[in-house]
Structure formats: C-alpha cells, structure tokens
Length: 202
Image 1 (cartoon, rainbow, N blue to C red):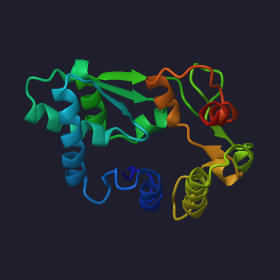
Image 2 (cartoon, rainbow, N blue to C red):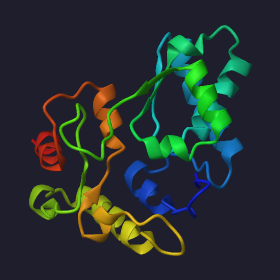
Image 3 (cartoon, rainbow, N blue to C red):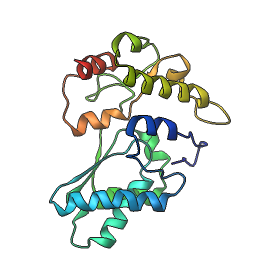
Image 4 (spheres, rainbow, N blue to C red):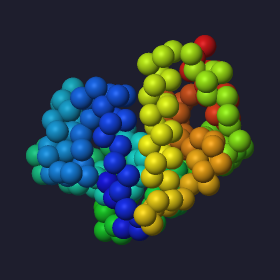
C-alpha cells in the first residue's frame, strides 16, 4: 500500500518471483485483497488456529482484514486470536490513526524493538556496509530474487519524492521488517544481516 507521505513502490514483479501467485495486490484493489486473505484466515480460525501478522509497513490493511473477520465470524475473539507485530515508529506514523487504533484495540498488538537498529533485543537488518550477499547466497533462484529486490530498490529509492533509504543508497541492505518474523517464530541467536544469512543458509 502507498503511505500518506510517499509515492508507491510497485513490488509486483518481486512478489511474483518470490511467491509465485501466492500473494495479493492490496494497492491495486484492496477490497479484492481483503477477500482473498480473508478466505485463508477463515480456514485457520475454523481449525482453531491463531493468525499472526507481521506488519511490514502500515497497519491499514490489517485493520480492514480484522474488521472483515469480525463481520463474517462474529464468534471470533480477535483480541485473543489475532497477533499483530510492528517494529517501526515510522510505520505507525504513516498508518491512518483510526486504523492503528482499531488494530491496537481489537488484536494482541505487539510493538517490538526496531529492526533497523542493533543490540536492542531484535535482529538489526539494516546495514549500509553489508556487501557480502553474493558470497553468502549461492542458490541461483534465491540470488535472482535478492538481485531483483535490490534492482527495484535502486530504481525507486529517493526518486520522484519517495523516501530515500540511505542504507540502500550506500549499496547495503535493509530488510528490517523481517525482524518481526524472527520475533514471531522465536528465532534466537541472530543479531545482524551476516548472522541471518549464515543461519538461514546453513
């Protein structure tokens, strides 16, 4: 989704490379995306599972999804069954205030330490000096996905009034939102990008 501060960065080609059809386009058609995700969420909830959301950006979509669940599954206690994880003050600041308040009220909302920083209790996945991607990632398909992500980042970073990510501009990496996934899965022993690749690839 586009934030209220910066123009949208279209990730569609990257998402298709990474997920091969298993993703929804909330920017082009948010109502369709909510319906698509709702069907998957309903299956999980009907089988007594909980829903965990890593909010890699603002929480506006999460708010719409949870409202849709509460409309269709009135017996679901979303405060118990939905766990939303957010790491960034900036992401909260670009969420519509009504949506952010709704998510905080109707879910188990977890604000974790910022994944842009090191040594604060979550992995720090933003590093302007990280240059070892090709040394660590040898799988051709994975490398193609990372290369495409970097190419898109460079294409749009700071362009046409978009946010300038200084780590990306310096040739480094920033996938700080993934700190939320590490927290959800309780993955221990990862402090930085180097640790992440070593752990995931070995």
